[in-house]
Image (cartoon, rainbow, N blue to C red):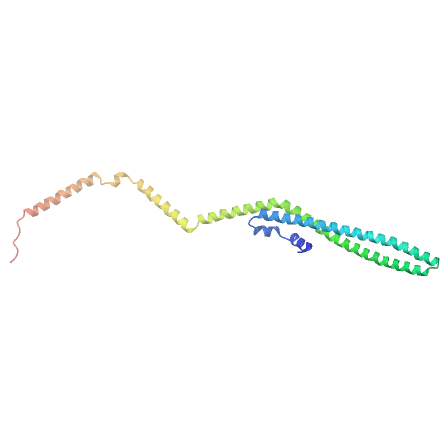
Length: 223
């Protein structure tokens, strides 16, 4: 993956969206920060290389321009001395140097464009790094609160499920029955004194009736 492509992916990434899907947001953000730091080092090194190349090209332009002036003077001198053959050679060398100077100038211009792009990318990554470092703690804290809220909500949902509520109601009803039974008067749980004597009288009456029946002679049965 090229440097500019990777930079674009990092700069346009949505930290909040990635955080929502992260199992360990703190680790994820640290990895993102580390990636941006590594990229920043790489881009700065490339930018330094482009700057060095531009300086070499600029030195080439200056050297070629100086040499062009020298061969221009030599060509004039050769013509003055009647050495047109040498003048022709001097002109050829001057033209070669002019082409070389033009090539160096084009290289320097291209390096300027590359350096400008690198500096824009450096500024963008540094701004993103500053933002990520500032938001790191806040984002992790938000995620922690969200996870705690999610766990709490899960506990509440389990407690309030139908089965749990039903068992709780049954236990409450059982306790209410036990409380009601404990509040009943002991006197109401056994027969009263009047009822006890009434039972005795009824037993005596039954025994008397039984004895009377026993003492009566038996009636003869019909033939």
